[in-house]
Amino acid sequence: MSTEVLAYIPSPSQGVWNIGPFPLRAYALCIIVGIIVAIFWGNRRWVARGGRDGEVLDVAIWAVPFGLIGGRIYHVLTDWNTYFGDGPKSPIDALKIWDGGLGIWGAVAFGALGAWIGARRAGIKLPPFGDAIAPGILLAQAIGRLGNYFNQELYGDRTDLPWGLEIFERSDSSGFTSPGLIDGKSTGVVYAVVQPTFLYELLWNVLVVLALVFIDRRFRIGHGRLFALYVAGYCLGRFVIETLRTDAATELWGIRINLFTAAIVFACAAIYVVLAPKGRETPAEVYHPGSGPDPELSEDPVDGFVEDDAPVATKTGPVATKTKTAEPETKTKTAEPESKTAEPKTAEPETKTAEPAKLETEPVETAPKPPAYPEDADPADPADSKLDSAAQPYRKANPDTATGDGDESA
Image (tube, rainbow, N blue to C red; front, side):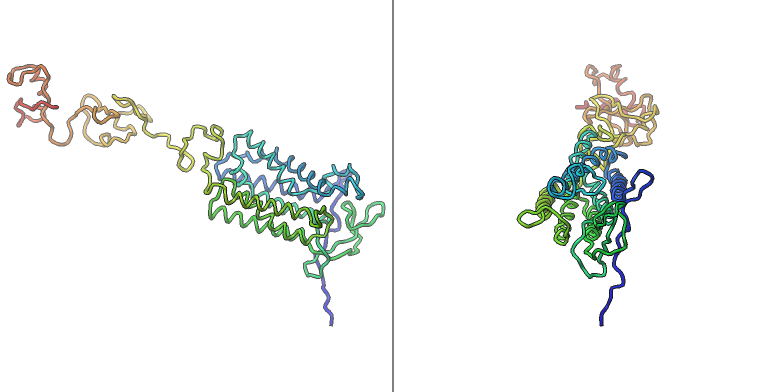
């Protein structure tokens, strides 16, 4: 008794639609959608970390072109014979990026260079910026892998697994037939059922995205460590998936070159995760000095801001405290407890100094002390006018006990 697999995963009948003279390519659309998603999500995460709205787009203007150029350069260099050897394509085809062929290693490396240029122009520190955009970049890579699905490329060996991918023969307008035709249309003839390695990578990328978001929220890591985790996580999955691929690739000592690249980049990313500073930057630390939303923020802000109404230190003498209105001194915002008393004011407002030792003595709620005699007054002479004027306030406040006698204050 034999069992028959009723269905596999079918490939799209075509990957290019012609709208008049203009071809609409699924591969390019997937890349564009991925870039938009990465910018939108990255911007939200960047603002949440203390950045300014719109800065991710400003940096992307530099990073995206660099990434596309770098991805194409890596693809051509690692598939040199296809364009400059005995391969089916000519050197001019190396410039046709719309036909597919981007190496993610070159895209990330050159994209990081473009991001560094854009971030430097905006006064942004690159490590916290990379942490903000890392999940979005990997999600964009997952979306971009759908382009490989439409192009019928990057698949593995033949398989009878139920999730095997059907690869169809395609023919172009001239009648030429091949499963590798990007501009062709399906003939309905199944060429092979293969391992959908691009789908494995897509799913792996989504899992790593979820892991990055969880780790970021749970441990609040920063200083570029989340970006390094993204790189390490991608390399780990890519290394395993690369061993399943059967498409043509440049090899060193019989080993696909992408395996070497994945291993080396993984090691570098893991080392960075271990050695980089722990914790996360404050909102004031994501910019270079003098470049943030508020360049006057203190070096040690609390939750990203400083108090605007903090008391101001003054010189010895009456305090020129910082007031919000021109109201009496009792409503000034100071740290002195005397300003909170409900004691009625005398003819002159009470003044305070920054140094307690030089504060003027004033009557308080406790029993007042006898006044000090002027230096040239004669205590033995009750008729001395200077003695009488010095003791007058005390006599008025204490008519029953004031005698005119007192101890000389120190």
